[in-house]
Image 1 (cartoon, rainbow, N blue to C red):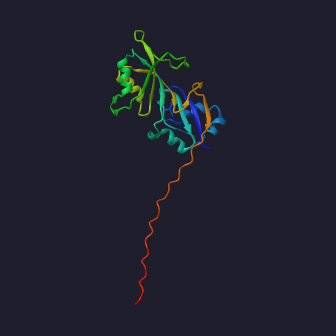
Image 2: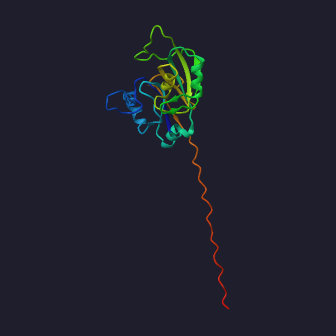
Image 3: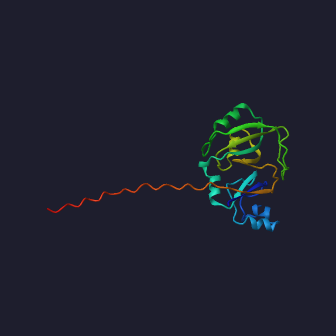
Length: 212
């Protein structure tokens, strides 16, 4: 049965198991628990989450499940909590909802709402904030997965992102997971549908001619 590991990826951790530059990776999360390290052998991330972003990262040991989660055709909604610098006006929200033109093309419309400041785990190092500029939180949901897309979207409307946490992918959510914590689920994938082969064309055999 396919298994899914639901992880709260910490800040400044790569979404991979090795790095030539010596940065923290997923392997560092599990290295102090040999039994878990053995259990997740053969697991790979289903999608990515930036080094400087936090929150939900899914890993699986099944290629079909990985494809279902990451393929654009599935249009799986991803929701982020985003702390931005500056005042959030109605015009900026409207732009995000209708789509932003980035250097790699226009984005699809996003779901955007202002939310109250969240009670979250402290980030290390903490977010650098300027005294004279207020910060606010947005909840942004998108169906795409371009490189640093949410950060580029908020920057395009004059709201630089200070902190970004992915809260959900599809119906999977962080819930109460703290950075570095995870839970495991067994997934029941639907059986693949068999394609019906087209009926074979039967050629009519010629009727033998009778001899006079």
